[in-house]
Amino acid sequence: MNGANMSARLKDKIICITGAASGIGRATALLMAREGALVVATDLQADTGAALAGEITQTGGRAIFLQHDVTDEDGWREVIAIIRARHGRLDVLVNNAGIGLSGPVVEMSLADWRRQTAVNLDGVFLGVKHGLPLLRQSGGGSVVNVSSIAGIKASANAAGYCATKAAVRQFTKAVALECAAAKDNVRVNSIHPGIVETAIWDSLIGTTQGARGTRLEALTAPSIPLGRTGTVEEIAAGILWLASDESRYVTGTELVIDGGRSIA
Ligand SMILES: NC(=O)c1ccc[n+]([C@@H]2O[C@H](COP(=O)([O-])OP(=O)(O)OC[C@H]3O[C@@H](n4cnc5c(N)ncnc54)[C@H](O)[C@@H]3O)[C@@H](O)[C@H]2O)c1
Image 1 (cartoon, rainbow, N blue to C red):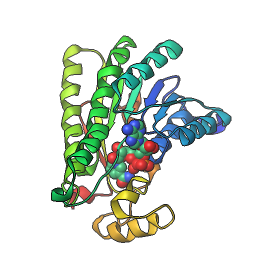
Image 2: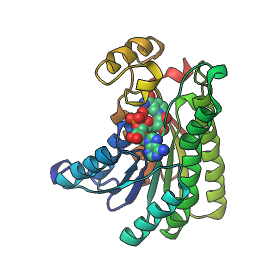
Image 3: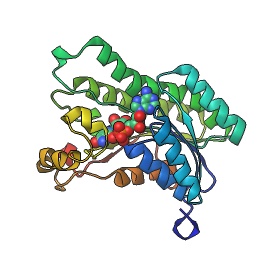
């Protein structure tokens, strides 16, 4: 994180990323801080979230952590108010928090369906609804919504998850058009990771960290044209590009990072 490793692809940008305590969100927060951003990391998990912010600041980066449930509208009001008060602007919003529930559709309870939809879809809606005014007041910026290849290609036993991720994909395009029409200089894109080893898989394939990597690789690598699962850093690299000015002419797009799985 110190000077030697730091380039400046996000120099002095104020970035808010949800679900930052683990997996893809954590890797993205670390990468963005290394690229010069001030990272506002939010998550339900207070201990690991605070540890992430500590790790960034101890290595010369800038970060704060806010405990935040993305399904809570008042929580969003508070997060945006804190960013406005402390930093005066917002340049990038990464709606990354998500959960994955699997199983046959006839066995899914309505409560689980609603919980998954609340985190994966309502959370993205609320982020955009409350983040957009500050992005606009800052002169524009970038919203990156983390969907999944499950939002493009369906899988059995994941109907609810697929539905939420497909909704995020189309929501993103609709908001991109709304922002373009408003000439607000806000770009809105979705990112579609393939299979990446993180804690989200523990509930999906019944593992815990340790056994997870080997089991996930064995279950899924044969279906991936590039022959392996992805890494959190490979997804973070795509989010970074969509967040940075390098993608200034890109809006409403879906960036798939999946080793070719969704086209096979
Ligand atoms: N790992 C994959 O293979 C994969 C593939 C495609 C898409 N994704 C998506 O990537 C995103 C990140 O997932 P991950 O794989 O890093 O999983 P992860 O479980 O490691 O991280 C998800 C984070 O979201 C947080 N979170 C969950 N509910 C929340 C809530 N209500 N409010 C705030 N934070 C909450 C969790 O505490 C956790 O830190 C998710 O949207 C997921 O659907 C993951």
